[in-house]
Image (tube, rainbow, N blue to C red; front, side, top):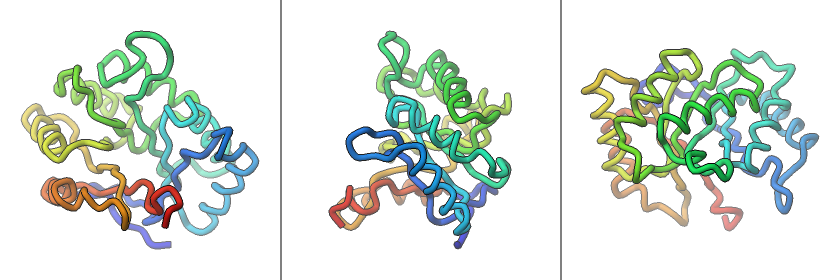
Length: 215
């Protein structure tokens, strides 16, 4: 297994990241036994980077990842998850408000069975919450030790630059990575998103590298 740093950060991860969106999916995913076996083989092959999200199977994926990593040394792993999608029927149980971020991270920590998240990513842009509110809330999570690094997913290039510029101006933690769909079929991020990440010194995490199996 080869490793590389995420952007300009000191976080070293395996170049292959194990995505877990299928963990717990009833129609096309896998059960706990299969998930544990997959994680075990991934770690045995030198992988240390595991990515999930609170909305994957409405929290079930995080729970399965938490159980699958039991028995492995926590410090040897880099666990990543995300926040943004709705997680219940309550009015504030979605988005990137301070309220939802605080509640979502605690719920993710409980499901993952860990005291901290290595990479906490906003899963998409919130068109209603001021970006400063989001960035300050995320910075609080790093300063309290619940989160080590911050990332974004599915942001437009201008949002990536705006968020990091705001973080610099307010002396907050910056995004070190972006996660976008990128494969031989969908290459549109090459136009603006990849240049923005290069400019900002951010790493790129590609989701759906096989175009949902098409490739």
